[in-house]
Length: 345
Image (cartoon, rainbow, N blue to C red):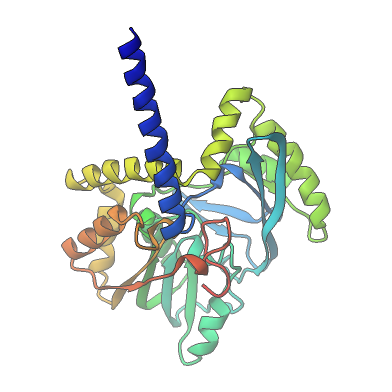
């Protein structure tokens, strides 16, 4: 029995040394790769979104909008979170409900730019007007929308055609996650909350309305209440483990390693969404120049970045014969906590 206990003690000692050593090594060679969506609390102007067709939505046309993200990070030692405003963006939509200053006239050939939140400017705030200023000879159209992917971009392309938009060329600004995203529209529960103030739940990707003049202190107070609601079902032990993962690089990289294995297996078995495949074929067959610009995600930066999805994305584009380039961002070009690039990125 004594020998058995000795072996257990030795095994525990080795485990502690390996974990501690791995923690120190990962902190020394790599900045934080993790996403903290679970602790992000989002706010947007009422009546900001309009569903158009199945799998198609736009922003409210000709509107001044505000979008805010507040983070509430837990502590293993206290129930009270650390709160701060990560970004607070003011936006303008045009006549088609797209985030850009310029209206788009029917029948005039345009360069159509599709993308997700990186293209719409979430986090670092909308930047499309800067691109338009650099290319005054071209009429650009910003079809960037948060949380969307290739299938949704093709549906948006078809919707914009019905609005008289004529494509001269197409640019798809994509991150590797976009290959895995399904089409969607805003559910009734979100409209009930944003437009009528009837907010009955608070999930990871839920939104609540924000006033144009609402102050930072008011938003922090509201977020504190939302935080209490979101984590009300956590026991003290489960909350402690939840908090610990946010501070341990070892646990973060263990999480990423498991995702890497799962993603590699998925791509190896041809696990691309059918609607992504269909959209890529449709864009390829358009008959106008089509280019894909791949952008680095936060967890893909650095020497130990998660490259499984990026490798899979390249393979899919090559299989469809679509031309692509890379825009490779560094870790310091992203916001401190949020997964989006800052204004410089």
